[in-house]
Image 1: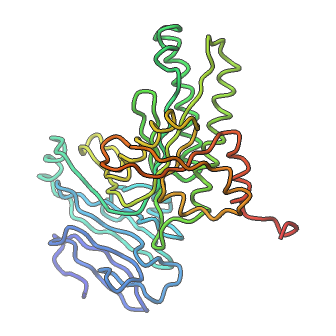
Image 2: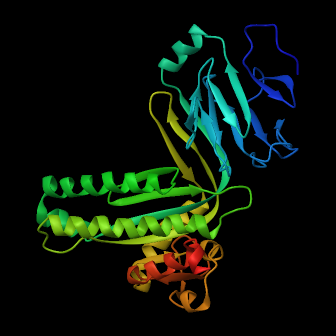
Image 3: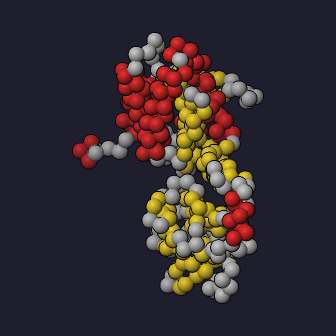
Length: 331
């Protein structure tokens, strides 16, 4: 495309192969960027770019968002990493591999007025993710025994520290539902890897330490504990909500099953239950793989029973150690 002369157009500029290119966004709802020939903007010669790397997507109110599609090397907007869909303003730049894009959008007072009226926007992308659902055990009994003020203080501390460590370990978003935490990790073009599942295991180990510290800090009639479900699969992720308040989350069968797996942990008597799709991503030596127990369970909402894999928290460190990269002297 050539540079547009109409200043009312919305577009992005980029230099590809030494040539100035302009991609008009005015009449399209999304612009995909990557090495795949199926992308709108093809960067096939850039080895730093994933096959499906990023997406510029228009919301219902006319605003645009930039999303990274779980790329190997990430996307930055104005120098900051993009970890969830972020809004684009006129003059914003974003970097994909060695290419720098500049976003242009004329200011439209009528669109700003519409946005202020808080329309609902759904900006979604389907991708492969792994979902962690963690549920606090004994919460209902503890809330009655401790009272609302005391249990709220404890849960606020727990959720604050959980949010920090989940973000540090690469989760794209966290959602807090009563006494449960949901977080998910986005995978790249080739699907999930053992290294990515390791981040989830490391998160659980850190969460266990957080809960141990809370148990030591507060005098509780019974200790805090948790159960967890982990599942992988395709799901729709994106910003759900309004222009004023949006929530980056994931929806779909893979997410629903993660919640069912967490519930199954009570049935099978293991703190962690992993779905078949996640278990298939883990490459473990036989002596470590035998730490998992296999159970046939009937998950609520599913017609037939299926095999799931259970693991105790006391065994999780050995599994994580087997997945961690080896130091040179260990090879």
